[in-house]
Structures are given as structure tokens and as C-alpha cells.
Length: 69
Image 1 (tube, rainbow, N blue to C red):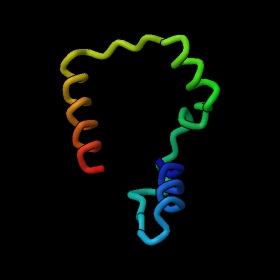
Image 2 (cartoon, rainbow, N blue to C red; image 1 turned 30 degrees about the vertical axis):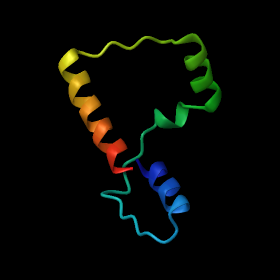
Image 3 (cartoon, rainbow, N blue to C red; image 1 turned 90 degrees about the horizontal axis):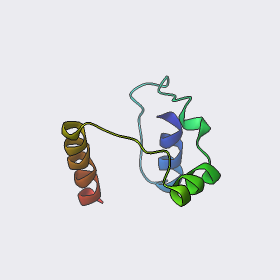
Image 4 (cartoon, rainbow, N blue to C red; image 1 turned 180 degrees about the horizontal axis):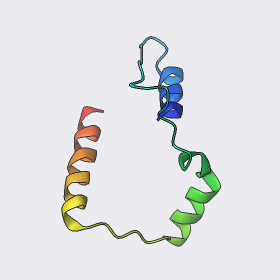
């Protein structure tokens, strides 16, 4: 997502980031605000159900990202 790329560049001025495409814009990401995140954490809603096989693969990907740092 192109906005994430802007943040990475700002946080890492000595590094070069090259987007795979300039068209990687997610309109739904623009709808997320800190207030909405806080509300979701406070109310633990909405509940999102993910099939177990997808959950396991997604968790493995997150674990790898955390391990990298």
C-alpha cells in the first residue's frame, strides 16, 4: 500500500524503498482512524471469523515478520 511506503520512507530516511506499483492504493485503509481502532479495542467488535487454515497461515506470516524485527 502506497501510504505505508510513505511512512517507511519517513521512518527510515537512509533506506530506499521502491514500490512494486504506484497504483497500490487501498481505499479502505483511508477509512481507518485512531478513534475507530480505539473503539474496536474497547468494544472488541466487530468480531471477524477466519477459517482455521487461513488463520494458521496468517499467524505464521505475522510470526516471521515479528522475528525479523
